[in-house]
Amino acid sequence: MIGLIHSIFLGFLDTQCDQQTKEGILKKAGFDVDTEFRLDTVYSDEQWQRLFSIAVETLGVSVEAAEQGLAKKFYEDALERWSMWFEMSNSAREFLERQPKIHNGFASGLKEQDRDKKQSINDKFKLTPDGNKLSIDYKSPNHHCELYKALAQCLMDHYGDQAEITETCCMKKGDDHCHIELLWPQ
Image (cartoon, rainbow, N blue to C red; front, side, top):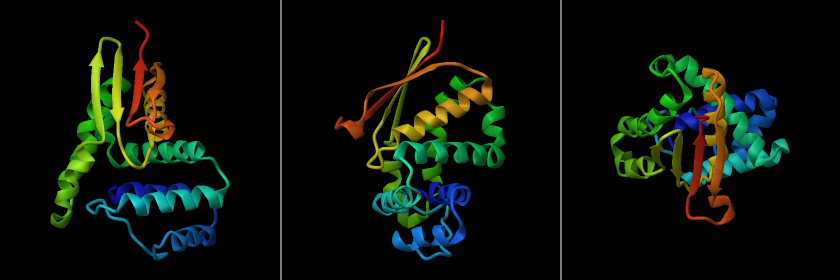
């Protein structure tokens, strides 16, 4: 995972706990308390999973609640940092159709030594539009399908759209990928 997610997650932690607790989470996860996570650096999935699970345990929240909180923080950060993404789209659907390209674009900014990890970033999402439905196949060892669904809901709220969000396959339930469908009314 690129460091942007870690950085935004630390911002989420700031809303959930005091500085001492946040520093304890970082230390327990094997990071220095003054670590600055970088957008152009890939951190191992294992490091991210350790940080995320220790935070969930320390905060006493469910994984789903943590992913939903991270999604809200990510949405707020993206709206401020990359407002043009939101201006380029007239609806949540337009934004979501662009999302895999945005996600994969982050890989282009990686440091040279991380270039071999580009494909793993690019392989996380496959989006298939079909009439009033978008199908998303998501495959990641981080199992953050709830994060994706919560981000999609943030976009629905942003644009005033409504769509039914369902998940028919889930890696958390043993499937080899997550399959998320967004269905807009006809």
